[in-house]
Image (cartoon, rainbow, N blue to C red; front, side, top):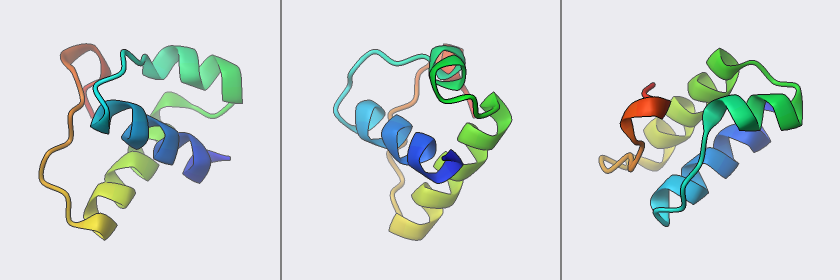
Length: 59
């Protein structure tokens, strides 16, 4: 579930959709730190420099 949540965060940030890690954690039951870690893993895997993440969702 953490991988899915990290991918979801990547997708919404990539398309500049307002997203909140805390809300995603509540919905999925995955901790914020796990979501952020999987998000960073995905960024590294894709080699994407533009994270698109905003200040309240800082990784």
